[in-house]
Image (cartoon, rainbow, N blue to C red; front, side, top):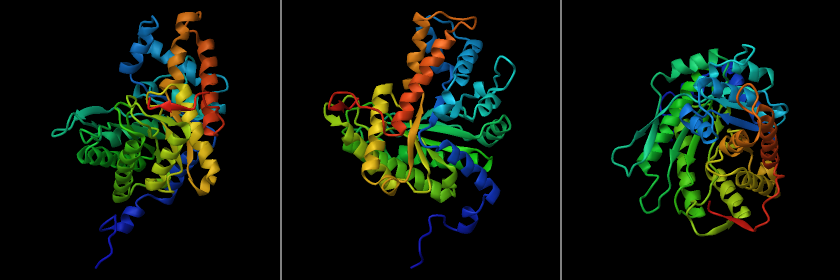
Length: 376
């Protein structure tokens, strides 16, 4: 019987479709982002997401106000001590600082690699109980070329999925559709010189158990990396951004931090290739204390079980809401400057929150006094 090859016909061509120089460039970006103790700041919220945050603190949203807010974060003193990269919305890629410096160039001057979230749309999958997939592959190569020319070094594509044991979700159709699209996106990014961040996100809603979450996350990530292998994605030039494996927020069972850390490490060891150098977790509806305590517990347990010999990946953060939402609240209490924002106070809190995330990435963040966390 002939041996099975996941690449099928033309295996050598699929393995070697990138030049040595292209591979080296992708790996260089990955290695820099994977600096231990540093993470990614996700500043890629669209206007639909960030405008309500501004309105909630009494501000009138505008493109100029969004630009000022982004510049406030990008210029925060000390931020590069905790970060290696920043994800931008397409709007932000085209914007400039007050002195006319394009934001990607500003970030690079500060030692921060700029990336981008390509524009995507949600599509409901027929024949499912409301499950979705993300569309945006048409024209992606051209957009990636433009992002690369603007100074971006990586891109990010998020595919949200839900766990509902009774409904049978995520279904095989939803998993295959989303993960195969993620792999095609990764292939296109690499062809255009951008490192792809692949982001399967099993959201916290629901009442599923922690073990249900392990099984669902393993199925999703196994399909993702099977698709990457089938399509010839260069894994050394790829980053995984995923949710923390966790029970549903409506669940009644209490799980300790060590339970959650063990679940995450078991899931990764089942399905994640060693070639992937770094996992940068999303916060996924957790606040900073929850996300940091859990990430710290994962890194601490990794050390106890043998460090890189047990789990040979950098385990860090790529957080947005849990770091930035508290910053908006300062608009209610602090005096704004000419930009309409209390920029100095916002920068100070941003950097303070990044320091918490950095400690978690090093396994040093102190857990809350209680014994464990409920599913949420």
